Length: 469
Image 1 (cartoon, one colour):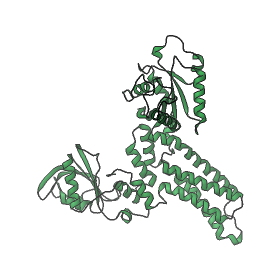
Image 2: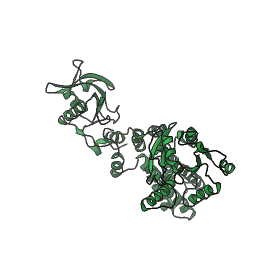
Image 3: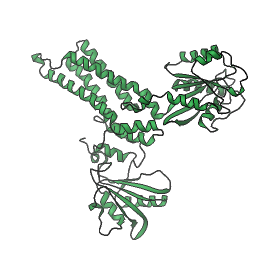
């Protein structure tokens, strides 16, 4: 990129603690900027005599001590990274010290005293982006990688950080730029009635671009839930064992279990990782006519959470399950939902109490049904295996999954602009007006990778990073 970090962040040398808050065996302090080496030399005494940090080779590690005015503070390792071969693209050092909070704070104080300033959230990654180490979508993936709490989320973030998604967006922009250039050339020779851009080829290109962007937009429903966790709502009448089932799945006593109907009045959520995929379980209030205002609010939240869920576990007491009743409840819920593609699984609970075949057993088995004893934790593995199989392995490894809301919104706007282009040609709108929509589509795609951006967008993105990254 043409823009350099110093043009936005200034020529300052920044520092921050890069390891997690608190004390531990080891801590890491990061320094980046033009004075990284000169400042480090003022506080670091290498064990190797005559060594100067500024003259050391890049990507080397040096043992020594840190102190000030003859007062020894700690023995440390100092990592040297010379521009442009560092994370930020600038001269940088990383100090590995003992994890005492006192030592960490004192080293930061020494760095500040000798010319550093404290880094803002995400400023190291912002400098890396501004210095062309990676594009904006890759920079955002760094934060996603740090926040990943499952294998699926990790794989998505790592693939995006390594440029898998960026390649696709740049490919789309490249096709649009070529055709926009041809239309612009036509405008330059408008008086000669020359047509450089074949209209049949244009419509073919537009159709292809719309198809690819639509697929990326549609992938967001998968990518986002793999990133944040697949929401699973547990619903059913009071006292059918919803909270007991949640506890059994989580293998801990997370929800209060009671024989009193309506015990669960608020929404209880917790997360479990099954074979690398995160599932967010939501235990809801029992569905029945509320006896008081608080219970009514809980039941209302149940309906909200069901709409948010991707998978719905409908729990019933297997000895009391009636096919017509269950079918009626499911149909009623589907009538109130925007997304009718949610997966419904019937959980026939309390098999430990069965003394005879349940009523409507044949019809119940025809549904997607798993019979369990939540109390005894029987067949819970069948349920977790079923949930994991609901996620297609191909979806997780797809290199062009969209998992970022900002990217999703930009793609939708780009698609809308392309639809306007197509409609414009059908309506014989002048070429100069059509190119306005083409440029809009390019603009929105460029916002994803950062080829087109503003300080406001950068502040919003990097402000969500942790300090030290």
